[in-house]
Length: 320
Ligand SMILES: Nc1ncnc2c1ncn2[C@@H]1O[C@H](COP(=O)(O)OP(=O)(O)OP(=O)(O)O)[C@@H](O)[C@H]1O
Ligand SMILES: [Mg+2]
Image (cartoon, rainbow, N blue to C red; front, side, top):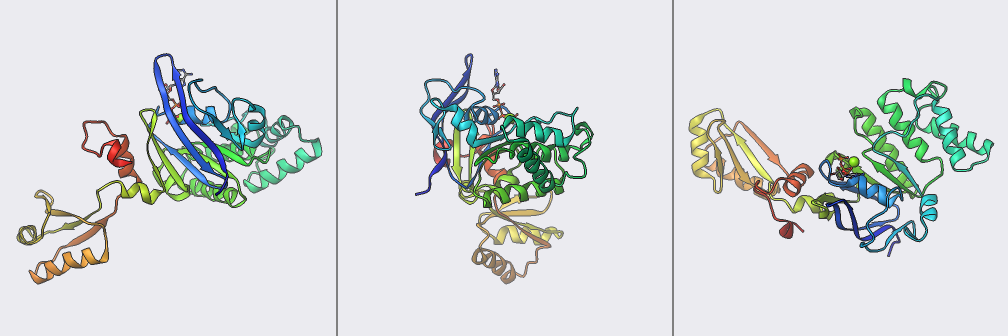
């Protein structure tokens, strides 16, 4: 069995009479990426802040261990094991990128020479060497985000918390960030990631948890979560109304979209099912103008689990 980098039982947090986290269990194995997803205000940042010792959980909750240390009993040991990149940048714009890095090195009590070496190395790794002597306020959003993460890595943490690390980055900068995160994990680092981008969780995370109404509505690998949700289908489009009506009469279990002359059939996207559909059309001498296969993605999962109750979606019980 692998050791857990993060383990929490019944994590709770309320502000006044507002319950934000209502008993959240987390188990993140060392050297893996765990992604916490949830709509705005779900409590992702609250969870990150509790696990990184920035705020206290409600006392009613169970034990929390981070990096093998009891968070309540030994917060100092937890702090020594982790790095945190917050949702909002910790970069000081008035000083240069290098000075920001050296400040972090001081905070970690690195000897001056060691601090300079680590700062230079990380600036190089994050492609910031050329900009190192410029005030951080002149950096682009993507550069600031890279500097933010570089600063998080100064203390060589074994566990890092990234709260929406790629929000506001362009696609190329986002892919670069994913590359950096993958490299960290290859080096054995555990990553606890919150994100609004389901594609990001799909790309990076070994396990994904969807936070909704204060609890984990579903948890699993991206594939496991996708399997919870119906919604895989084949879509056939026609330009000839006669062909459209023929196909609607020939195929079983179709949903009609008369205005667009499109038919939708539930499907798992397997070769066997597709062939069966095509065979039926061929036999009837019908040709569709377009055929598309839609497999459910994490967006479907996310909307199904966190959508308003009046929308048709699976209940939490059946989704688990
Ligand atoms: N210090 C505070 N006092 C009172 N309420 C708070 C406090 N901090 C957070 N909250 C509330 O807790 C809830 C969860 O906030 P949190 O920042 O954890 O959400 P989030 O999932 O990170 O959202 P986002 O996707 O917008 O970043 C929100 O309703 C927020 O208003
Ligand atoms: Mg947040």
